[in-house]
Amino acid sequence: MGEKKIALITGANRGIGFETARQLGGQGIKVLVGARDEEKGKEAESNLKNEGLDAEFILLDVDNAETHAAAAKYIEENFGKLDILINNAGIAIDEFENDAPVQASRTSLDIFRKTFDTNFFNTIAVTQEFIPLLKKSDAGRIVFLSSGLGSLNLHSDPNSPIYNFKIPAYDISKTALNGYAVHLAYELKDTPIKVNAAHPGSVVTDMNKSGEIPLEEGAKTSVDLATLPADGYTGKFIHLGEELPW
Image (tube, rainbow, N blue to C red):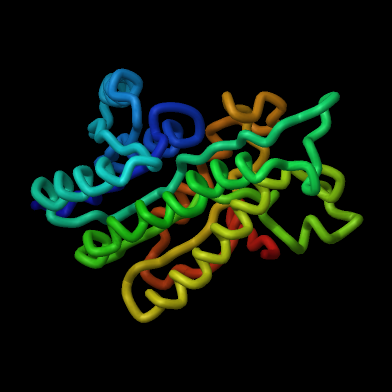
């Protein structure tokens, strides 16, 4: 089995997920590149290997429970444990009119349901599938890629930078995910597993063309939370080492 740490990152074939894989790989961690598209996942694996990193594509579609089970079985048989789970995959499908997001009273239930299925319910499903393997690690770490847009505190404060930017389905799905992170951290507080939510910042990605910070910085919070020491915190909402309000 060896002592090498094993990290699984969902949605790791591009964007923040890929950069997170690169940074963890650079620390000597074996990265399992979770992706729902085999071709894109293998391309990401190849790109990481070309940089001398220990990377391996693993088929994992957050919205397909069969892939969760198959991935867990593969990891169990080949590594016997999982040290790091980064729930990075997510969607943002809120609709816009005249460059402004459709507001809460008119956001369709279909948009809410699809967003919550991926960003909340199916992310929980992935996490629950891998908790038994994380319990076999000496230092399990669970990271939920959240967003400052999930902060009720910041959304309620007229002086907050996000007060006038509300994309209801996405924002509230991240609020819910933060709630799950708090409850899971409490459940696991007497174990070596640490559970935290990461705000990457407004990162330039395919999903966020108007981002303000580069991928390298955007991935840093996830990497920090994935590699917290034994006396590190749990149940926190973090951006670059700073705690954010829920």
